[in-house]
Each structure stands twice: as structure tokens, then as C-alpha cells.
Amino acid sequence: MNKDVFIDKLKDQGIVLDSRQLEQFERYFELLVEWNEKMNLTAITEKEEVYLKHFFDSVSAAFFVDLQQPIKLCDVGAGAGFPSIPMKICYPNLNITIVDSLNKRITFLEHLSKELGLVNTHFYHDRAETFAKNQAFREQFDIVTARAVARMSVLSELCLPLVKQGGQFIAMKAANAEEELTAADNAIKQLGGKLSTVHSFTLPIEDSERNIIVIKKIKKTPNKFPRKPGTPNKMPLE
Image 1 (cartoon, rainbow, N blue to C red):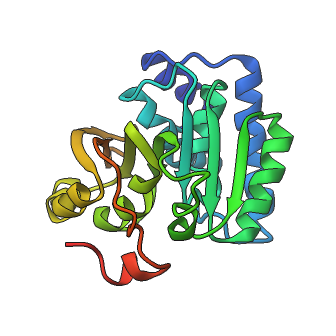
Image 2 (image 1 turned 180 degrees about the horizontal axis):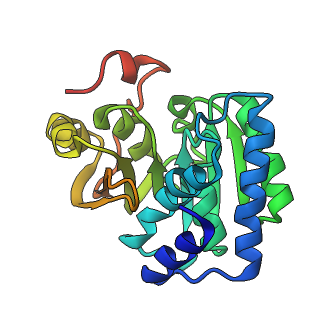
């Protein structure tokens, strides 16, 4: 996906980027490639691939969820900043918090945020399990995102405790979303969530399947969740 197609495809979704935002995406790409030589941030470094599989793919959640108004958003396990930093570039009004378990990635994100001139961005080196136990963050966010490979039952335990009642957990998945949701149904209920919608579409150019799963937080998460670090992954809720 070259930059012109990127611009046009976002415009088709009502997202019109100005010159400043386009400069931010370009600088993001440069820093991603530069820092990737020092640490493992991504296996995708070819420019058109980055614009498609990282930038466009990250923003795709905004095609289905309203990010126009001021929103507190937490991105769990964002890695190199996906999906929240591309969202932040497109919607500067967002108040972004990123938590990641690897300090090197947090160092990159702090540098990236400064270089891009982003404000209202906050970065925490922590495990999601302990971060969600902190009362300063627990059930404080309008939206919590995860663009991770973990199963829905695992992601739900890491993310739903951070969502405030009435807020949303947005999981960005590739194929097999329905199958994962069926397996995670009871876990989502235990954690205070309820399936709202699943938006399915194909990523342009390569036509691969994408699913935006929206879970609404309808009641408080019991205090016992999330369990100790590592436990959700080793023993997913059933």
C-alpha cells in the first residue's frame, strides 16, 4: 500500500489526513526501521507493507468505533505502538496509555512520541496482570485495545478489568474470530463483558480477513481477576 492509496482508503472511511499527520506517519516508519535494527520491533519493514499491515490495519478499528470525542484509551501489549499510535495520529484528541512488558519497547515508544510531537500519551513498563490490579488504572478507560495473538479468553482477562462500566474492549483479530469467541463466551461473562458486535472485513490489496470484536463492559470485573502474571495464558478461563 503506497502512501497515495493509504490516503485514499482512509478518506473513503471519512478520515482525512493533513500534511502534519502524513509527516508523522512517515517519521513513524523511519523510526520503526531505524530502531528495528537495534531491537526486535517488527518483522515487517518494507514501506508499503508497513503502511498496509501496521498503519492502515491499526486505524481500521476506527471504521467501526467512534473515536471523534475525547476518549481515554489503553492499549495492552502494544509492542511498537500498534494499534494505538496510528489511531492517535489520526485522532489527536485521544488520551493514550500503553502498557507493555518489555522495557526496550517502552523506551522506543517514549522516543517515538516525543519525535512525533504527541501529547497526552503515557507509557508503562508492566505486566498487564499487575497493571490492571492498580487502582489508578483499574476500570478507568473508555476503550481498551489489543492487537495481539493471544486467544480471546486470555485477552479478555487482561483487558476487561481496565475497561470502565459502559466502556468497550476492542480486540483486533485475523481469522477464526467466531471460533475464538465461542470458546471465550463464559470467560467474557465472568469478567463483566458482553459481546456487542463483530465487524469483519478484508484488508485491501492482500484481501486477508480481519475482525474487529467489540465487547461492552456491563458490570464490574470481580476483584480476583486478572489472576497472577502468566496464569491467564497457562490456564485460560473456561
